[in-house]
View 1 (cartoon, rainbow, N blue to C red):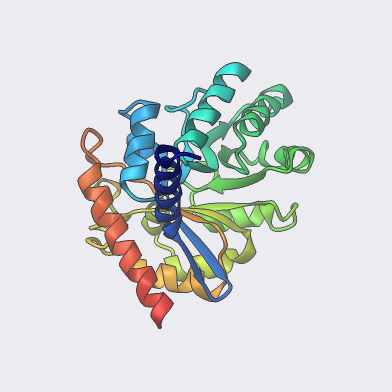
View 2: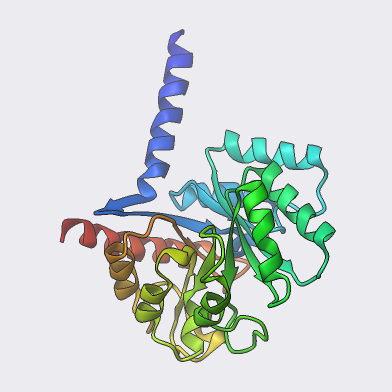
Amino acid sequence: MNRREYLKTTASLFAANLLRAQEYKIGAADIKLGVASYSFRKFSRAQAIEMTKQLGTPYLNIKDFHLSLTATPAEIAAARKEFADAGIIIVGCGNISFSKDDEKDIRQKFEYAKMLGSPLIVCAPTAVTLPKLEKFVREYNIKIAVHNHGPEDKNFPTPQSVLALVKNMDPRCGLCIDVGHTARTGVDLVSTIAEAGPRLLDMHIKDLADPKAKDSQVPVGEGKLPIRGIFDQLVKMGYRGSVNLEYEIDEMNPMPGMQKSFTYMRGVLKSLQSA
């Protein structure tokens, strides 16, 4: 290896290690601070990759804005290589709707996740389709995390409504708790996370100035949601998954608020590490 190759390799390893610093192992917990790519819905896949790297994390949940659900196998393979070459680690895909009571539709979406190399699908099923996903979870060995969408959601407004159906399913069937939507239903966030226990497979993090108002989102740490209490509970229960920032405001210029959010969350996790 010549000097130029050595320096290039060293720089790549340094960058990779810097990105992976967003993994916080505290006791039995292994928390990864990541991004839901919905935050970058107004930007291309290449831009979303660079913006994720600028946030200092490799962990990304892929929304179909950045890889269509109807993409061909060749297109999925090319996208997967693009993510890998950039050092991006795919922690999940979605949110993906499973509103059709159609096994062909369900299989196509699991094939998409398999080809992408996604270990988990964040999903929005119905009470009818959710039980039918279990056999695909077993066949593909891909987890599903049902995303609750708050008071407007006719299927799963709260994490409790998800738990009622998944509690006796394969352990790879669980929840993606969205803390903003959950807060708006009036349930206690911290106790709800504790109640989910090992069924909590993924999380979407955000903050609200008014816990009952969907349109009051602010950078994490500037609102009223119990962010430290949330992370403290995740540590207590030994959570070993991703906490993905879903930043739904400032869609044309999300980076300043997302940077603030990551700075605050890193501070909380570092304080928990040293406690």
